[in-house]
Image (tube, rainbow, N blue to C red; front, side, top):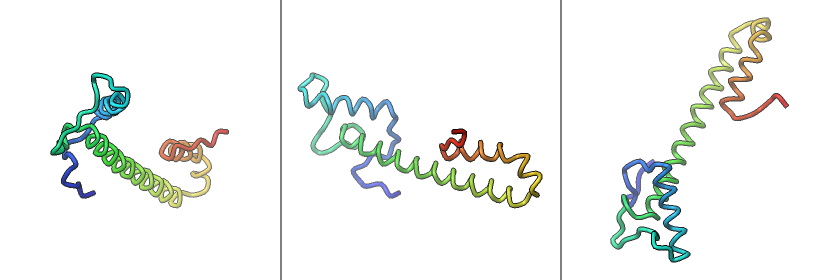
Length: 109
């Protein structure tokens, strides 16, 4: 992902994003600890830009996690094709537990 010029290059933590969100909400109620914004914009400090960077970073992290899950599923399927039927019957519950863990599915129901 190429980073826009106005986006911070540092990683925004969950805690920072929560704080930025809280300050933006406070702005609506005119609470003393309102949003941090500036002109010209400061990508490392301004709450709107910090939240935008956080969302972009989380999207990349989710995409990468999904890719790792797809890779794991492909590896399990490759292994399953290499073993004979008696082995598959024996290890099938373990394979499904792995797949369920990686994909977030639950086949127990």
